[in-house]
Structure formats: C-alpha cells, structure tokens
Amino acid sequence: METSLTPLTANGLVQSNTVAHAIVQALKRHGITTTFGQSLPSMLHLAAEEAGLKQVAYRTENAGGYMADAYARLTNTPSIVTAQNGPAAALLVAPLAEAMKVSIPIIALVQDVARNQTDKNAFQDLDHMGLFQPVTKWVRRITDASRVEDYIDQAFAVACSGRPGPVALLLPADLLLEPAVESVRKQSLGHFPLDRTVASPASVSRAASLLAGARKPLVIAGGGVHISGAYKALTALQEEAHLPIATTVMGKGAVSEQHPLSAGVVGYFMGPNSATRYQRPLVTDADVILLIGTRTNQNATDSWQLYPKHATYIHLDVDSHEAGRNYESERLIGDASLTLDALLAALKDQDLTLRAAQRAQVEAVISAGKAKGKAESTAVRTSDAQPIRPERITHELQALLTEDAIVVADASYSSIWVANGLTALKAGQRFITPRGLAGLGWGFPMAMGAKQARPDAEVYCLVGDGGFGHVWSELETAARMNIKVTLILINNGILGYQKHAENVKFGAHTSAVNFAPVDHAAIARNCGCNGVRITDPADLADALKQARQSDKTTLIEVMCDENAFPPITFYTPDAKVSA
Image 1 (cartoon, rainbow, N blue to C red):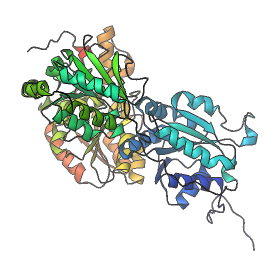
Image 2: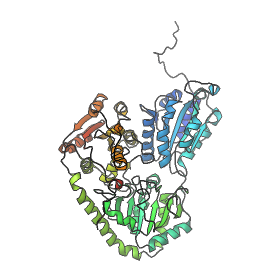
Image 3: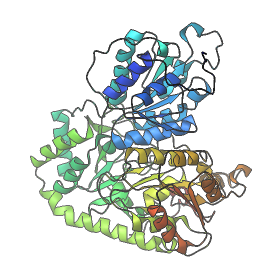
C-alpha cells in the first residue's frame, strides 16, 4: 500500500543537484563552513546541512546578523547570514548597516518570492532591492540558474575587496529548485582583505619625512588595523620609529597597551576617572598625527574637539573617501599592513635621531599619565559599595583576562566600561564593540558569533539591562547550540546613557528610561544556561571564576548603581586636567 508524505513524515531530502546545491558548493569553494540562518531559504539550508555546513540557528534575524558580524571580524572570512523574504529580511537592515559603517563583509542570502509571482502581492513580497540598497555595497537578484556562480563570486569579490562591506543576494524560491548548471570555477575568494594595495612611494616618502621631523608626533590607530591584521607592522613602527600610539575604541588592541609608548584609548570619554584623562596633552599638543584606519567620527574625536586644529595630519586608509574627510591630510591610500611596512622602510632612510632622543621623555609622560589616571580611579574601581559600581566589574575581569581572551561589549555605556576599564595585553587582542551605528542589543549575539569563530578562546561579554532586553531569546540559542560565553549583565534598572544625557542636555529625563524589575538570572536558568545574581562586589571574582570553569553560557547579573556613569567628557565639561 502506497503512503504519501504528510507534514509529520520526513523520509529524507528528495531533491538533488538543484540550484541550491550549486550555491552550497560555491560557498564551500570559497571556504565557508558555517552559516547563520533560521531555516529559510529552506532548500538552501537543507542542501547546506547535507553538504556538512554548520547552521547556527538564531532566534531573530537581527541577532543572526550580529553573530555573523563578529564571526567575520575574527576569522577574516566573509560570513553568511540568511533570511526569509519580507519581515525577516527587514530585520537584517540594522546588522548590515552596522557592517557597512565599519567595513565588515557579510553576505546576506535572502529568499525572494517566485519569479512568476513578483508584483502580484505574493506572501511577504517586498522591494528587497530598495530595502538593502542603502546598507550594502552591492545587491542583486539571481534569476537564471546559469548565472549562479557568476553572482556568488561577484558577491565574495565585492564584499572582500577594497573597503570590505556587506552585500545581499536575492534568491527566488522557485529558482532554488531548478536543476543546477555544472560548475567550472575553482578559485576561492573567501578572505579579506582580498586585494591588498600599498600607498604610492611619493606619499609614503612625504609621510616619513613629516614623522621624522615632527616635534610631537602621535599615531592614532582605528579599526582598520584589525581588518588589515596590521599588528606586526604597527608594533614595528612603534618600536623602531619610537612613535607613541593611541587608539580609537574600535582600534583597541591594535597594539599592546602595556607597551611604554602606548597611550590607550582616546576620544569622548577622557573625563574624571578615565584611564587616559591625563594623556590628553599627548593629543592636543601633537604637531603631526598619523591616523590609521579611522573614520575620524564624532566619538573618536570627541565631537571633533579633541584633535588639534594646528596639527599636520597623515591619513592612512584603504578608502580614499575617508582620508582627509574631516582633517585635511597627507593621503596614504592603501592597505594598513603593507603601507605601514613601506612607511617604516622609508623612515629608516630618514634621520631618526630626534625620535630616539625624545623616546625616554615621551615614555615618562605616558607612564605618569597612566599612573595618575589609575590613582584617580582607584576609589571607584575597588569600591565595596552596594549597589555595585560598574568599574568594579572590569577591575575584577582584568585580573582574569589572558592575552587570547576576547571581550565583547554592547553599545552605549557597556562599550565605554570595556574600552576604558580593560587593558589590551598584546597587539591583536580583540575587544569587539558595535561602533558603526552603536545600536543596543548587539553585544550578546556578537559574543556568540565570536565564540563560533574562535571556539577555544574565552569570550566575555558586557551588556546593560537596556540592550540585553532586545535579545533575551538568544539565551535559548546559546543553550541549544552549545555556545559558551561569560555574559556579564549590568542591571541598574534604567537606560543609563539616555537618562544621564537627557539630564545634562535638558535638565530632565523622559519616563521611558526606567524599567520594571527583571530577574535576568532566572531567565537564563530557564533557557538552559547558568544564571547568578550578584549584589555584593566581594562575590564578583568567584562568580567569574565559576563561569570560566563551566561548559555553558553563564549570565552574571550584577546589581549596579544607577547613578554611576562613565567618564564621558560631555558630562563634566568643567573638569580640568592638571599637570
């Protein structure tokens, strides 16, 4: 007696050698081993799992995009995120926009309605081309099975070349079921930077001359150093050319912050209790500043007030549009690693006597500034107060960090607590913060993506209760996918940045900044993760150690002081830096 398939019967995949299979084989050719998806496009994921690709199944598309972002940052391979057409696709806009802003290659494979149903009000039909155009480098709709490999290869090439960034491919549901066209391509484009270029010899020579002859030079390194992997080149420049180096938030970890010529993170949080408050003159008095892979954006420059107007700037960036955008500069257009190598070679042809002679004095100034900042912040970093000061969290976490640990932070205050309160122990240590759009909810999913990228690394994540409220559901993903992250939650019952900034700007705050009490640790436990609530700062160290020893995600909910705020200079404009 014949039986037909029913919704409750799965007898095995009946389709083979389809366009979906061809796409999967193309992804494998480019080195893809993992996708971030939630079933749809179903045919694509069925073919992918059949071929051995791992699917990290998120709960929401925006969180899946954040996971893919961190995965790409830590593997230097473009990441794959998928979504259904319509509302699911719309949720990819935010993570793709973040990736676009900070130059991270994500390839979004989005199901579209069948080709003969376009513009007929098919279920969840949407203008996906218009949706993704502003937040990607390139978006296309594949309509012909014979063009699949063309478009897949173009997607990888566009995402990974020049200034990396996201792309989107729209896949009509009926196309995925068509017979595949035989593959003829063999090249792999699944890495970035894909095509490294170096700045012109003439511009490199001019930059070397400026740095060699400067009275008070400074290097400010941004996130482009991480994209390029330019750690060795930057460290060599620091050591052999005797140049002091500061970083932006995204550039944190570009050099070891323990190096005597490393000043730390400079930008919009250099107020009282800042680790770099007393490094401000290093920036404001500089006469030649080398900017590397930085967008010179509002936060990095403290609303364009920190960097001196009188200085001569040299701007190294792979994107010719960024060089000189906000500060007229000597332009070095090229890959950071190759161009820094060329710059150091050119500097060795210069007279570096002045640089070598000033080194001891510059190191002493940086050391004194660090010591003064550390002494000033001792009270808040070691405070036994209850509710707990957030600075105590980073103080305890620093004691556990190894140089291979990865720290991820959500946007808002969390990024500042991490950037200001932790020390990069080596060049190349990663502190991942969503600084493109700085949207809330990025932190925990990014930490999960980071752990997928580096499963042997310890991954710590700091979030606030405001941001974490966006992505509670991904605790279930962490349990189901066996993703282990140490998640530290600052529970202060408010949207801190919003409340404090409104008070400063307007003298009052909106009612929306206050939350009802939530037991986040209980949510974690009920999702299959560990969950513990900390009310006494003396218990923090032990909680971190226990989380480190566990084999699954642990949420450490820290009950914090709602009146504690980071050293944002905007909050304390009258605070002066004394010598």
